[in-house]
Length: 159
Image 1 (tube, helix red, strand yellow):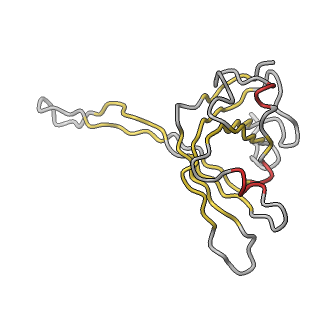
Image 2 (cartoon, one colour):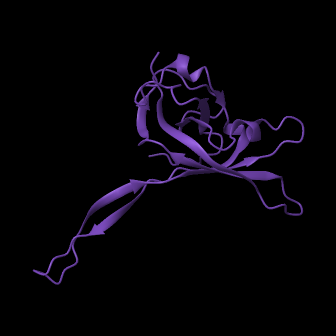
């Protein structure tokens, strides 16, 4: 088993549009070509799928039983601002819809291709907020995105 950090290993692509990827389990290279590599813009990306246990106890026992409840969460990111062409800021205004395609292994400079295993997240931007201005810090902004449908965490890129 080889443990590895995300830096330089992860590639994240943004494919804009609600119908840009027809099948989340098998995004095609042609669909991916309509998007762009956004890895260089991002400092952090959080893709939680938190779940909850729902109480299901009854009076027959003192033990508090639970059942599996719902799960999911919002995608949140921290991105850099640019003084010349603020490309990342322009990509994600409020209400923009599209797909984040994330390849966790394979190198950030290597294009996603057939038959890479990727995650596909269909999102709608909820907010785009300038970050606190701190002395001696790079200017950034935060993004919150609602996950529209359950993501595919093991999609295989098709030709």
